[in-house]
Length: 132
Image (cartoon, rainbow, N blue to C red; front, top):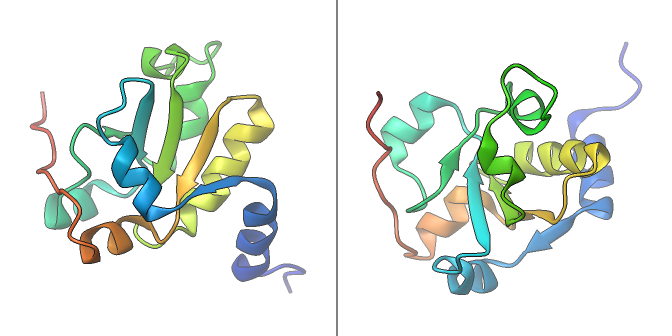
């Protein structure tokens, strides 16, 4: 038997992390000091597209990609930019944002409503970057 469900974990994470409102996020799209990070599964990206210019960091690897001592480290996370994470509906991104905040990454936030809200609002959507 579990003692906390996913809804409680997401609620607790949202109480601790910054959530960027959709309208504010749209204004930040062309800000060189901001990096959107898509944490969805690659199949979601291929099916639905992604926010233009977003960096894809799968949820299962993001802590490893952020840690400079990890063999999987990605330099983008050492850029000093503000990171705005998103998933489909802002549940996974709330949990991932809390994990990165706990690791000391800052500034880090997540997108209210996730990619579903972004797309529904008619915000720009690009294709998934081509694989190497």
